[in-house]
Image (cartoon, rainbow, N blue to C red; front, side, top):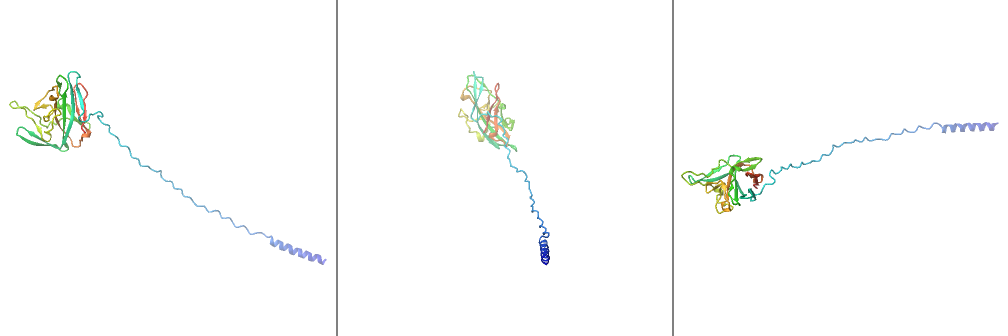
Length: 241
């Protein structure tokens, strides 16, 4: 009996010990949520590419214009055919002209914003009959879409009733020779001061001379033209540079 009591006491002690060891466990530490880093998204403006507009090309007003010294034909194709050539230009702000009345030179000065252009033209009749001669008024300079007529201020040769015709010379060009003769040029449409009305056949009878124009100071030979209005056919046009 005593032995049994001892065993019970020991068993009770063991139960108490086991109960103490198997008590409630400590709560597990709370999990810390993972740290997140805010991402800032920056939207860049669309890239711009600099572009250069192609220059607008101005079309040539007369793409078929002849160069200096080129020949244009004027005629009826039977009895007369005239070779026309624009062969020289001279440009300056002033020129000196010789007055036969008082035997001295005078200086002609262009107005502000203007200058002088002198064009040299030759016409030779290759036919057998005399050919019509286009007057100076039919020969115009074209520049910046405008047509410029011969300068009315330029003094042309004139003939008085009691004296031979006067010949007006321009000092800067007075020693320019005609294309088909050893003579010096004079105003176009004149020969030895006499005004002509037609072109006689043959190179020795060619009408060769100059025409004076008052033109804008901005004019350049490369941007200007000489147009000759010819009766019965299309105009002939030369570029001057």
